[in-house]
Image (cartoon, rainbow, N blue to C red):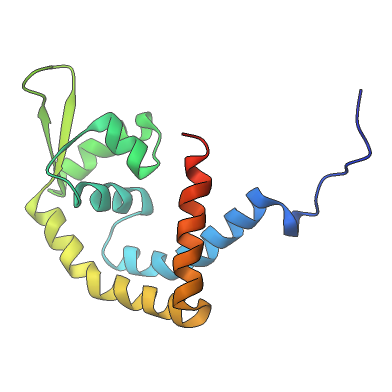
Length: 147
């Protein structure tokens, strides 16, 4: 039985649609920078995640970078060949693939940092530093509802 007493929200006030529009508004600022460094969004997320740790199991990288495991599997070879990441078998479990950032990946992080910081400054100037910080915290809380 269809309940017609609650029609769908207009797309402007739909949470999934609003999140997608906000993501695009932010990523439109970052995409030219990533393209200038010859890296795509998914590869950048992997580099960022690995830049925060010594090494991680590939499954955990996929989770933290919000990338489907089959997509990451395809990316590992290309990123390893480019010298951005390093791949090794786990010493205690040979089936696990461990990933770490390579020196070239670390250099990429360093090279991109000033441009990235400038984009963040512009976003905070346009939206407000307090609102930006609050938005990030709210989005973290929203994402953790699924945990």
